[in-house]
Image (tube, rainbow over all chains, first blue to last red; front, top):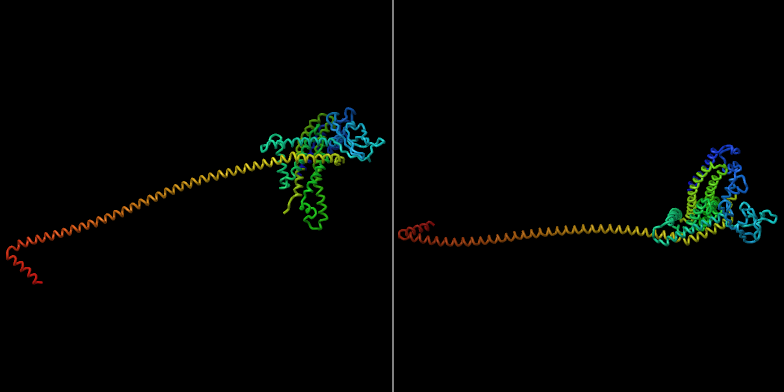
Length: 374
Length: 164
């Protein structure tokens, strides 16, 4: 499956370069007087070539504004205190801050998209680039103030939506099993059953062995949690639109879960392999640190793999859309849309693939930790 | 750099939400679903096994039937053969007995005939001797009517005696 990943990321790179090439050939060259070479990274191309292009946000209020694709894309990739619905309408989300004074809860609507400061119980807060900062007495941002931000951000809210959908789907499926005992599956039940059986028979059983039953709830939850969040991330409008699985915090938690599950279930053979490997004793100073790094590096790879795959997909889709605004012409739109469509289909595959890979590798690591040697 | 720095808030909420999801799904979804799938698989397995057993039973019964039929046929053949040999032996016995009986009868008859023949012969001998004596008497009487002839005869007889 690692080969698949390499393949997927190569395809992405090729597509980006190819898209840019086509774009350069079809648009008058004088628009890009500053650009010297056709093959340059996305960010620098869009930054240099953009000239007096209005972005999606604030185009009306601020008139002609330089379109900065990097900023726009990063805004979409990153977390936010508001959930953008349409046009200038955003859903305000609750801000929860843990300050040295205590908990502070208020709506992000008080910031008016960062134009106003909000005077809370303990401090005055200002929204700077979607980060809540404490404003000092002199009206400047006080960087020294320690504020822990536990806000329900866009990603958290989107994750809650996904969790709600997962709960509704699987509890209703479980209900169907209770209602139709011993009968053939039907409807949603028959859609989910092959996936559940796939996780059990093709992920858990071959990798973990006969002890698989204990880990099934974790593996299934991980699989469907990642899958549903991946799929919701592909929806460009309200209930989706957040880059949940492409956020390092979420993948960090998922990988941490794998790390904990693997190590608390590790048997004596697993620990012997780490602290007393079958190598000449003079290699121990090298082997033991390597094995200890291995404990961390396996989940670390899981974390980065999921984060990078999903984020890369989002960046490519947003870059392709940005092309329309960079070139200020509708002529590029069909090309962009065609490539976005292709990318979306690819992302659909990646959504399933990444959920599968994450679960498969988790099962593999668990299997390595619980394996009995005879 | 911001992209790869996990924010504490999201880490906290993700961990909390994921653990809640895991607990809820484990209790309300995975347990019943996996249990039901497992049960159904077992019942399907059982049904298949039962079908297989029934099939084997059927095959066994069929072969048993065939065996029985074959056995019955063999038995019938055996009985027929036995009957035939019995009949043959009885027939032979009867024939032999009849022959022996016949032979005995013939023997008896032969003996009887012989006896009768002997008796008849004896009677004939008797009669012959009587008749010959009578004849001889008559002959002698006629011949010895005259004296000369008597004397000749006696002389003749004496002559024979002298010769001896």
